[in-house]
Length: 277
Image (tube, rainbow, N blue to C red; front, side):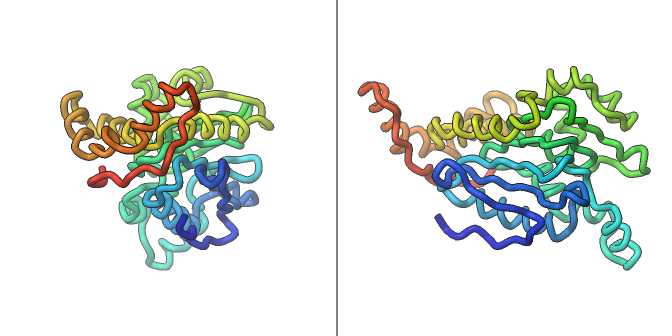
């Protein structure tokens, strides 16, 4: 494994499952893990590194304290705007991966969120772009309140949420908390007690790394293509070109051998795709 980038104390970087699972913990509990320019920059560095690091098979994101993420640090944002820095619109467009470098990141690695608390604004936009979301019983409010502040959830949250269910539109338009029954039906993978949130996320991470990383990342690539509006034939044909190594690589042979020998497969790190999606 190549060295992970160094980051500030606002982001805790750890590894699980012999380094295959990257865990990122937002660490600004007094500020409700609100996003600053510096924190977003460190997230982008680490996530870009993880995307290219073949030994990372899965990524888990969580937070410190009672709130997962309260969105943008508005105090910092207003100070920057008053000082002639980036406007809210400029800021939303300057990072190709969106809020927290996650809200519209097109990652080939599975993204898991362990919601230690509620998610507001950009924090909500972050979670709905992830693959597996562990909610916390009684503590996982998800709200897009931007319209009540004169701004817009403009970094990917609106289309990503609507892809999950058209029933979400009233709550986006009114900026109100999404009802728990809709979250459980369309957003959360599981809802567990507070103490079980991180164990549940790591349980899912372990389940994912029991699978061939090549096959998982090719599957994620097809999900990305579908979210981009590709039709069935386009998804199949483009994936066959981008991920041709998956269909003839060492892990395919290992999976077949392990099945025939009635043993658990011993997967190796996946090859790089021919091109980025």
